[in-house]
Amino acid sequence: MGTDHPKQDQQEDGGLATAKREKVKRPRLYKVLLHNDDYTTMEFVIQVLMQFFQKDHTEATQIMLNVHYKGIGVCGLYTREIAETKVGQVNDHARKSGYPLQCSMEVA
Image (cartoon, rainbow, N blue to C red; front, side):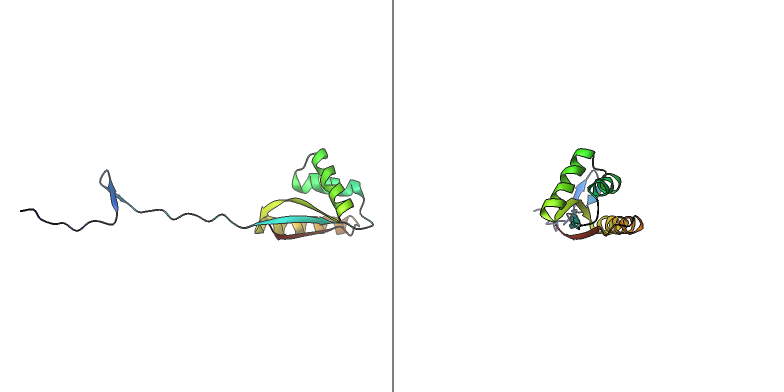
């Protein structure tokens, strides 16, 4: 005649009880965007993309052309805090440099 033992919810591994891990959700990403205007120079936009978004000259030129011809260009995808910081940095830099360049963010 055997004795019945209740089953344990946790598995034992080498004498240590381990609990199941919950999956960590990835943070929501935001697109950082540059908007076209009639005054900001193409050279300044390229410089902003290289300085604040670490783009090489070729990629910065492609994004600048999107801004110029399509009215908007995507600089990159970032978490909310990083996107907010980059938007603020670019807008501040543009104002201090005398340009009306607008940078914004939206949910990706």
